[in-house]
Length: 383
Image (cartoon, rainbow, N blue to C red):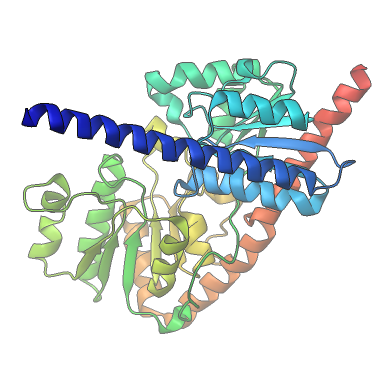
């Protein structure tokens, strides 16, 4: 009897949650239609399909924030939350009649160009997820079925061009107002060195390099190490084992779990030096561009980065950051930035200024705007 009552209670609980989810989706759709009607009719129309919500950096920056940044450039923008069903998506697209449909990543099961026939589609892919076969097939389909592809880096663009020659590179941009607190001036920060990664366990080559850098630099000057992308650092976990040499060396350290992007940027406002290593032997790593570097730049963190991928197109060694190629280079650059506060200030300020020109969300939106208008012009010429 009790088991039957428990089973009934669980079923009622599931139905209740499903009902509230239905109401939430309906409310989202109502607000989208209201927002559509409030925008100018004669502007070119774009509908954006993020793969996730704001809590995932790529969806937030390359879809949600991108939509906001396109509006001042003359676009009528409708961003459909990832929670909405395929039928809701199709209904909104039917009423909106967009000139462009921007699909951000293939992770969402409904992010497929073939689901929205008759619409000019642009597929956006910011990293090298295609190294995982279960994700590669869907990415290939999205590239092939789209009218154009926007890639987050040169290496990703090279892969995409195998399936769609109409591929462009646009670095991920980020707003300059995400931090909820005013950063401490770089010259006044404690000697905190961080590796801001999305997953400390996934990038093994980088992790080993970072640990060696921390251990070697700490022999020369005091520092504190902050590690991001940590889901479990309890005794016996891989991260706990990874940090053991740092504990034995009595180096102060902290770990951070995954957090929303605004809180992430805010947390960096006390950091002196940010590390951006790239393992050249890893195809996944070579698909990176600036990633977490964006948060460093917004938070005025001085950056030391591997001299590969697209880094040299932004960083000028010794002026707005350091580009390094070997362990000694990493150690020397980090030591300089920790021991010389005025140099750290100079580096961080120069990088922030350059970020506003080339890596801000406004800079990225201008590039996307040019690509989209070129696509519209090509379509008009064909007709």
